[in-house]
Image 1 (cartoon, rainbow, N blue to C red):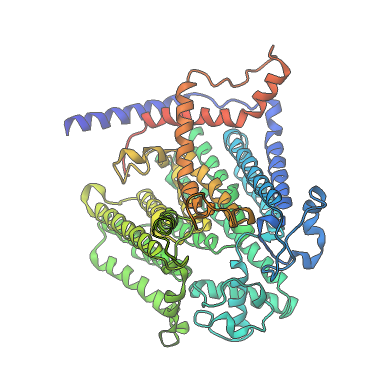
Image 2 (tube, rainbow, N blue to C red):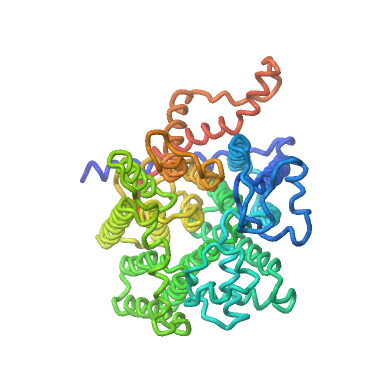
Length: 631
């Protein structure tokens, strides 16, 4: 213990010296050429979105039309201009007889899709490396509005859930049916029905989302009529963009209260700008909010609003009650967020709040959920969705899917038996093991938080706990996984990054050396890229491609390990390259250079990569100076 105390004191002294040195350095005035850099980067992001807009409608990617073509063919102008003789998606979401492109063309379209995503991502990384010292909150918000509107005009969706939102809203507003218990097959004559993918289950979302979508449909009904689907679809996209912007503003506001000692120092403000920009411009988050319009953006807004009240208000019962109500509203939007509410109870326990008040908050939470579900209960029929929802038994886009399909393929190749694709023994086994492993990790984290030395006493400690729980849930807790599930995590992680806690997280909760690579943003930046790339695994080329010597094992089944493990592998490679090139990264010096023009061109093209190495080396130096504390 004395040695640990001396080490902690030395770390605190080193951290104070590091802060004093950073404060003593006056901020450099940007060069005249750098004043136009924010506009240039913003223009590059617009160009990247236009290129993505041109590639997504290609028929080989097998995405879904979102009916913007009904307002005119202007939505397909980028595709028609860059690929004039190429096949595009049929102008309906679920074609009965889709045209299948030739295999070479289908593979070429996948390569172009991945290339455009990678280029957009590297430009995003470049913006994070160069812009935080040159921009303000106003630039971040206005630019995000413009980029989000461009995303909202993309004529396709990579997930047909948008049409499911619409038909459940029409059930309540037009047909006066219960969307939480009624199957879409009851209204096969509705204009939305031909565009659905899930037709054999009621809404998997709760009363909060039903109320929001029904309100939007009620607004669109007198303006566009009952058969017009375009206006309510656009309203859902605009709602996603609005909640994304609201979350960015909440991240900016909350991070101000999470700064050490509320200091208005230059490094702290730059951290806030960096974290807010990283969240607001994240291609994955913008895509899921303004293109696919998933309700996870609204879910994140409710959670961040609860945290905003928690950091701003006085610690009294009224404040805790308001926060509890917001957590209940989030649970009535997606029920899996009940995993986060125990974190609030652990915070109250760590602060020494009386058990009577903790019990009141728990009762209020349960009472709000019961009260909101009561109008939709229908004699308990609302629980039927648990038996038909695929997340209860299926695996997709996860390591559990890969292991289950690999097991099935090995059994088929050795014993020559027939195994069903859905509900196979391998799928059931890996599904159960994955959820069981998450349950053990979850209860272990709760138990650790109950111990005196690990208690959650501050909102910062609560945010760290919530971020780790949700990351574990997405990685192993839900074998049925889709990229938009991570929206909540990226919002929580932005708060960690803004407060500087990301340099210690998750070691503040898990003292395991294996998670040390997660102490910096790089693996999570790469995770957002691999999650977007995951949509490419559903293209035509991978749909019928199989692994040799493994009958029935598709190449697409590698998507789970690639999406989750590739960011860690790339982070390890960057660390190795950083350690080898630590003395100097070869950044271009000011003034003239005697290098040949070809060498200068290569230096310019590799600038985002070299800035990535530079930021990684800087983060490693800061990690050695930062103390480890849960507070």
